[in-house]
Length: 540
Image (tube, rainbow, N blue to C red; front, side):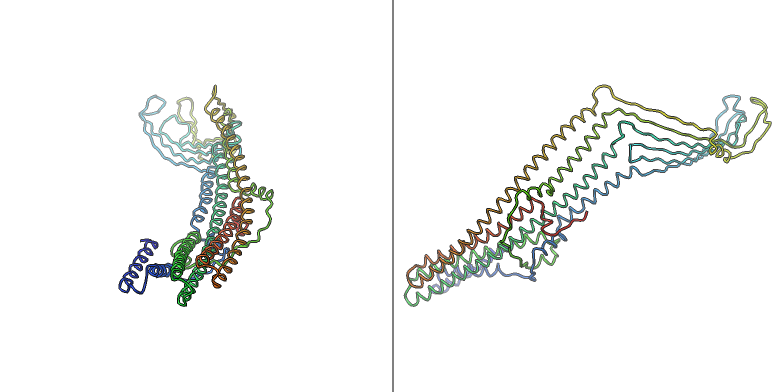
């Protein structure tokens, strides 16, 4: 059951208890008295609180929100997510090492006289390694491979047995048109970096909005606190009038009906007081929601007492400088500009895809061979000389560049007719024009919001002046009406009406002051200067 429902049940029970007591003693109370007692008990229940009281300045509330607000805690993680995405994409440019080792043996039936027997047994051991990497500039990539193998065979006519072969090969592929300035990997990296900046912008915007919401909630709590004081004062005036009327009835200078009217007004004031207390609790809860991280927080279980009060002296506002600052600092504009940068990156990638694919490939290769060599008297003749050797001979030939091989080639590919890339590029151009138009529209919207915010501040300043004058006149009117009533020249009705007018004028003045603070907060928000006003620095 909610607290409001609980209070309502208690109020009804209190009212029924009071009525039952009145039925037992009908001559002691009447219906207005029952209402007064029930309302008083309800107000007492609603005003009771528990937990410590914490005095809170606006600066302390902002610091608390920046430290514990859950929306900010969530938003702070987004830049880190993009950092990890960027690290993952940059790993495409890290060199990769590969190697393979294998050993095999094969027995094949003899198919020709050159096999030198009924079957041929071949043993092969392979030791290969390589390095490849895509470079982050120009779209090129290189490969370096070192291949080594040892083979032996029972074939009688083998010249090297065992035979060692080594091969070193380096190649580089360089795109000349398509893929030279940008490719899919570099496109993703550039977009991710821009999105990382956008995440920072979104974080600033969340901080700005949180501070604006907190400042509004703080001044709402101040307004609710001061409104409660006004309602206490109004209740005291109403109760004083009840006591004064009761004294006048006792001496016979006032009719009893005037006491009933005064009591009814006091009961209405108690009801208004209960509503003010409820509004205070609601405003306090709204502020707590912005500055706590959980219900275990000390601020959640405490009664918050705002100690700052609004400063009514507002400096003149230069619309031109305010508008210029907004166009520079607004996070939504900054976000749109970065979105335009993303569109330009995608447009560049689309244009790149329409170009012919022309790749320049260069390859350089060194090779060597070694092992025990058998020299024969002729083709198929007997072995006349055996020259011992090993893998060292193969490496000697390799490093002496005895058998170099180099290759340069150009690969060209281009689709005939209009390709899908051409259509995608044309679509991207239209989207770029749309984004540019949206940015201009947003700039116009910002100018409208800033101008309207300045107008609101100036108008509310005039409202405060009028509301203050009205409150002062209401105080004078109540004092004059009370003097006339004391002299017997006025009635109870006019005194009650003057009290109501004073309470309404005080509330109007407080509301105007609150609206002024909200207008100033909105002016800061539309400029995105809440961070500066609060002295907040976001470290990227």
